[in-house]
Length: 181
Image (cartoon, rainbow, N blue to C red; front, side, top):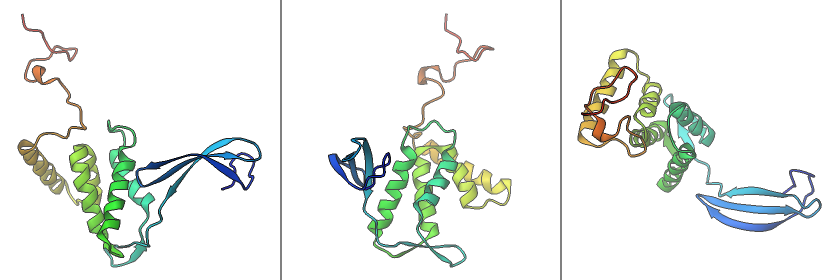
């Protein structure tokens, strides 16, 4: 490992820890003494994605991350949520033990996880993934989501707009809840 500061070719490992799917190593350069962190991940066997048009291309984690990032853009999600979601999907794909995986399987994995994480991110991803051609198809997806929400509680990762005791009480012009007298 070359030092990022002086490019010296040798360093010693000061600390090593297991992280999600790899190892985090704290290193110190033997020439300049600077410390830096490296992350090591096991490189899985080549995994190929079968696209809708039957083309095959190597699985690219960055493409997965980009799609999820776009769906979750400007959503109130905790830091690292998107990376964790991508890690979970990648690990599940490896557990399947297949060399080729249809893109539909990956898309469904993402949608399933986004649905339990954030409804808006789910709809954003679904609108691109399912290629809605008109507003009717999008409305049907939202209606399905609303009807399933009535059966299951909202995701715990989403904060409520109002505390439960204030739901149903009238708002003032400033958007505050009127107090009962």
